[in-house]
Image 1: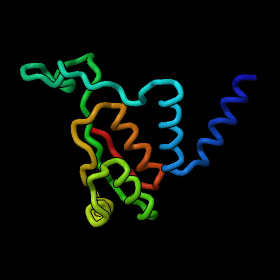
Image 2: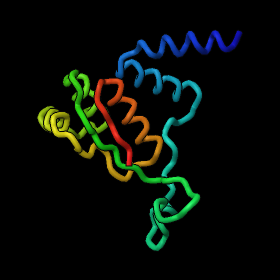
Image 3: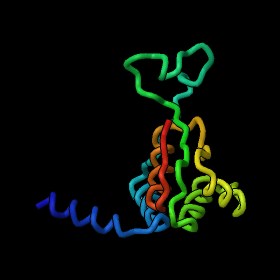
Image 4: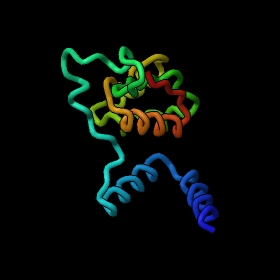
Length: 130
């Protein structure tokens, strides 16, 4: 019975726009007092500590979000870019959306990178995490 409830919830969530999804995440965070993004590990960023790529067996802690293709729904992608980085002006977001290989976010934690990827993918863009 619980599996049916979960399936129905997922189906409803799939119908949401990026902005509605963002509002849902914020409402859940407020309601339950949780944060969707993982905290940044300051020790991994300190000098002399090998990066995740250099240390076998450890999970990568720093990600770069790269826009591979802006897709056909440019307006949605531009809105998602401005939501991810509120400091972007309309022209800057438009330019980023039209330039394959653009770095959207650099040295961000996994939660932030996954959230940015989800927003852009939902908007119709192709995104890569490195």
